[in-house]
Image (cartoon, helix red, strand yellow):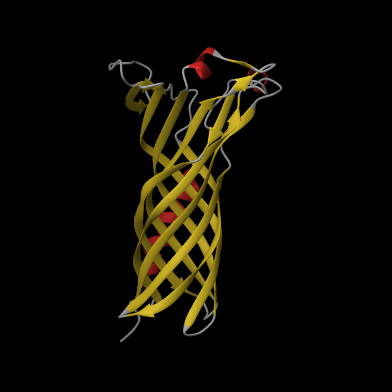
Amino acid sequence: MKKFLIFAILLLFSLFSFGQYSVGGRMGVNFSTITGRYSKDDGTKSGWVVSFPTIGAIGSYELTDMISLNAELLFITIGDKTKYSETGEGEKSSLSEYDYSNTERYHYFQLPMMARFNFGDDFRYYGIAGLYFGYVLGAHYKDKFGDDVCKGRIRYKKTPDDPDDWYLDPKYNRRADFGLNLGGGVSKEIGPGNLEAELRFGMGFLDHNKFDDKDDKGDEYKPFRNMYIGLTFAYMYDLSKK
């Protein structure tokens, strides 16, 4: 992953050394969840959360009229909402009786590298596919027991120093993410540049948890991976125009 990060940064800056390139900014909203479970009947139900904003910079180098390479530097939030549902034979857990829910949001620095395939003329549409690297910069949680709400930060460190915060041991909790982006959008020339609307699906490959031994997971364990759908708008300006 370190090699991928270095390569992505070099690619992004290399876009500024060629003649046929565009730069711009991106902003939007993210719908996300974290897949996974510790056991089949753990009494939990995972849901999607809305997070704002997704924001960052874009560099694009045009190889041909149809194909370009994009590298981006983004700040993106990926989260999950877990509720305790009915388990067993119609019986509720004690947490379900108190309407317990937990919402977590992880704020990532993300570096996507993608190929873009362009079609059309005046009103263009395009598809994208590529990989991304992400790293958690910070995180927050919100617990709700009926009318009682508890909020705090999620920290990656061993020693607690604030009773309202959660502490994740870096030895067993992963801050880095690596995954795949797929999507598409439409582009229209407006003013000196192009306004774009894009829908993007992202899926992480890495489990949030780390284990010393594979047997520690259990037979019913499913990895906790990021999954998100991003709706964003971008404005791109072609710096090769005279």
